Length: 359
Ligand SMILES: Cc1cc2nc3c(=O)[nH]c(=O)nc-3n(C[C@H](O)[C@H](O)[C@H](O)COP(=O)(O)OP(=O)(O)OC[C@H]3O[C@@H](n4cnc5c(N)ncnc54)[C@H](O)[C@@H]3O)c2cc1C
Image 1 (cartoon, rainbow, N blue to C red):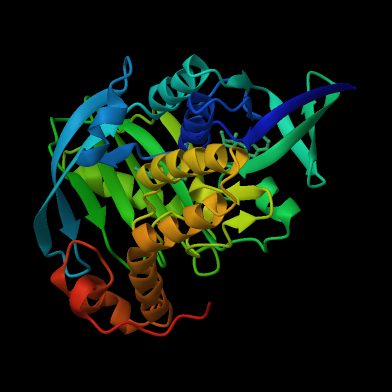
Image 2 (spheres, rainbow, N blue to C red):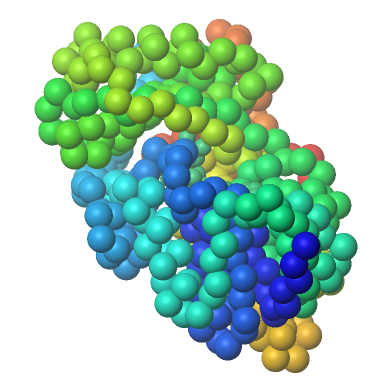
């Protein structure tokens, strides 16, 4: 057993953890960031789209893959809807590694292959290379994704998640837009085709309680894209993963905070969470440095800022999920108007009355 002392222990070196580690280290804190993965960002579990304002974060080598012009949404009737939705397709592994490299440049220590297992309020147990390391830290940042061990050890209940399954397939031709498929085949989620140069990420997400098998709907979506001459049959890579859809959790404890997916900041309708992970990580990193410097309100201010910045859009998305929950696997799920009220590309999404959502 070994013992290490630091100001801030960051669990998870994804976009949230790397951003938090960088900000805290830049402000002078001694930071240790641990990730159970042996290589940051691998395996990639992502459709790899970020909105255009994320451009400054995509400067790392090999990160930028393709510009996206807009979003094409296909409704159950087969009617399509084109909307401007500029963004960027990234190599998510390279993106995560670039963020982690910036954290290390700022002075944070990074341990990969390091599994965070326990936390008693001041001391963490990290399992690495067959050895248990005790890490004494003044503050803990939980940036360990949808099934956050940090959140569990702090006493937070598990958050609801949507399950996903994705293939990477060759594109038969250049593709400028992201495609979104709204249908009862993907209850509580949707299908997507996100082009990335010569390939595309083709995937489906759904509520596990309503759709246990994602293999068949993904195979059917792949076949329909093949029939339309958009993609080729080869499957280059397979991935998947959980997306939190419960909205904001408790964010702050006495000397601990949650960020990114661990904090429930992922959008419960679109599943987008990279931008929120980076922004929450930066904000939490700054707040922890302030807190270590004696500003006792800094962590509470972090929570307040997250609620202000993300609260309204998360609340709307939760309301839309709640409204759609009762219509899946009923004839209403085949009505375009119903799907329109539940998807961000349509005015109806922003205009329809908000449903009450259980906290
Ligand atoms: C299939 C799929 C497609 C998606 N597509 C998009 C998209 O196109 N655009 C978008 O914006 N969002 C997308 N998302 C969501 C996005 O990936 C997440 O919101 C984002 O990764 C959140 O970043 P994070 O740093 O909070 O968590 P993560 O990226 O999940 O990072 C958490 C890190 O913590 C580590 N970890 C976990 N537990 C421990 C432990 N006990 N000890 C040590 N380390 C631990 C993990 O290894 C991981 O590296 C998608 C998600 C999925 C599953």
